[in-house]
Image 1: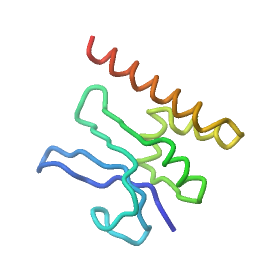
Image 2: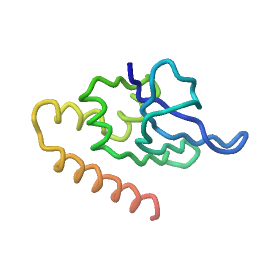
Image 3: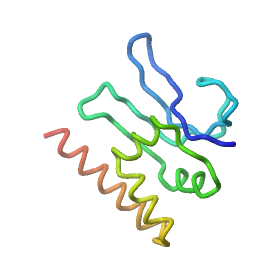
Length: 111
Protein backbone atom coordinates (compact mmCIF):
# COMPACT_ATOMS: atom_id res chain seq x y z
CA UNK A 1 0.00 0.00 0.00
CA UNK A 2 1.24 3.50 -0.83
CA UNK A 3 1.27 6.24 1.80
CA UNK A 4 1.84 9.98 1.43
CA UNK A 5 4.29 10.81 4.20
CA UNK A 6 6.93 13.27 5.37
CA UNK A 7 10.59 12.49 4.71
CA UNK A 8 12.95 14.43 6.97
CA UNK A 9 15.77 16.47 5.44
CA UNK A 10 17.86 19.30 6.83
CA UNK A 11 20.49 19.75 9.48
CA UNK A 12 20.44 18.53 13.06
CA UNK A 13 17.91 20.63 14.95
CA UNK A 14 16.70 22.31 11.74
CA UNK A 15 14.17 19.92 10.21
CA UNK A 16 12.49 20.43 6.88
CA UNK A 17 10.47 17.79 5.14
CA UNK A 18 9.65 16.46 1.70
CA UNK A 19 6.17 15.15 1.07
CA UNK A 20 6.68 11.84 -0.72
CA UNK A 21 4.70 8.88 -1.97
CA UNK A 22 6.29 5.79 -0.43
CA UNK A 23 5.48 2.15 0.19
CA UNK A 24 3.96 1.61 3.63
CA UNK A 25 6.77 -0.79 4.59
CA UNK A 26 9.73 1.45 3.68
CA UNK A 27 11.50 3.39 6.48
CA UNK A 28 10.88 7.11 7.06
CA UNK A 29 13.98 8.28 5.18
CA UNK A 30 14.23 5.25 2.92
CA UNK A 31 13.10 4.42 -0.59
CA UNK A 32 10.23 6.45 -2.03
CA UNK A 33 8.27 6.50 -5.28
CA UNK A 34 7.92 10.23 -5.98
CA UNK A 35 8.56 13.62 -4.37
CA UNK A 36 5.26 15.48 -4.16
CA UNK A 37 6.26 18.63 -2.33
CA UNK A 38 8.14 20.42 0.42
CA UNK A 39 7.19 21.47 3.96
CA UNK A 40 9.16 23.78 6.26
CA UNK A 41 7.55 24.20 9.70
CA UNK A 42 10.30 26.55 10.96
CA UNK A 43 9.07 29.61 9.05
CA UNK A 44 6.20 31.84 10.14
CA UNK A 45 3.80 30.87 8.62
CA UNK A 46 4.98 27.39 7.64
CA UNK A 47 6.11 27.04 4.01
CA UNK A 48 4.26 24.45 1.94
CA UNK A 49 4.89 23.75 -1.78
CA UNK A 50 2.93 20.88 -3.31
CA UNK A 51 2.48 19.40 -6.77
CA UNK A 52 -1.26 19.12 -6.29
CA UNK A 53 -1.94 17.38 -9.58
CA UNK A 54 0.42 14.57 -8.53
CA UNK A 55 -1.09 14.47 -5.02
CA UNK A 56 -4.55 14.00 -6.59
CA UNK A 57 -3.14 11.31 -8.90
CA UNK A 58 -1.75 9.27 -6.00
CA UNK A 59 -4.83 9.72 -3.82
CA UNK A 60 -7.10 8.77 -6.73
CA UNK A 61 -5.10 5.54 -7.07
CA UNK A 62 -5.53 4.64 -3.39
CA UNK A 63 -2.62 6.31 -1.56
CA UNK A 64 -3.49 7.42 1.95
CA UNK A 65 -1.89 10.40 3.70
CA UNK A 66 -0.43 9.92 7.17
CA UNK A 67 -1.89 11.98 10.02
CA UNK A 68 0.87 14.60 9.81
CA UNK A 69 0.54 14.93 6.03
CA UNK A 70 -3.24 15.20 6.37
CA UNK A 71 -2.71 18.15 8.76
CA UNK A 72 -0.37 19.82 6.26
CA UNK A 73 -2.90 19.23 3.46
CA UNK A 74 -5.70 20.64 5.59
CA UNK A 75 -3.69 23.76 6.48
CA UNK A 76 -2.83 24.39 2.82
CA UNK A 77 -6.39 23.74 1.60
CA UNK A 78 -5.44 20.67 -0.41
CA UNK A 79 -7.94 18.40 1.36
CA UNK A 80 -10.83 20.75 0.56
CA UNK A 81 -9.78 20.82 -3.10
CA UNK A 82 -9.44 17.01 -3.05
CA UNK A 83 -13.07 16.69 -1.96
CA UNK A 84 -14.10 18.96 -4.85
CA UNK A 85 -11.95 16.86 -7.23
CA UNK A 86 -13.77 13.72 -6.12
CA UNK A 87 -17.10 15.41 -6.92
CA UNK A 88 -15.94 15.98 -10.50
CA UNK A 89 -14.25 19.38 -10.65
CA UNK A 90 -11.44 19.73 -13.21
CA UNK A 91 -7.85 19.25 -12.02
CA UNK A 92 -6.65 22.31 -13.95
CA UNK A 93 -9.11 24.57 -12.11
CA UNK A 94 -8.06 23.25 -8.73
CA UNK A 95 -4.32 23.49 -9.46
CA UNK A 96 -4.76 27.07 -10.72
CA UNK A 97 -6.65 27.94 -7.53
CA UNK A 98 -3.86 26.40 -5.43
CA UNK A 99 -1.21 28.42 -7.30
CA UNK A 100 -3.18 31.63 -6.73
CA UNK A 101 -3.54 30.83 -3.01
CA UNK A 102 0.21 30.20 -2.73
CA UNK A 103 1.01 33.47 -4.53
CA UNK A 104 -1.33 35.32 -2.17
CA UNK A 105 0.38 33.69 0.84
CA UNK A 106 3.81 34.75 -0.45
CA UNK A 107 2.54 38.30 -1.02
CA UNK A 108 1.21 38.65 2.53
CA UNK A 109 4.34 37.00 3.96
CA UNK A 110 6.66 39.54 2.28
CA UNK A 111 4.58 42.54 3.44
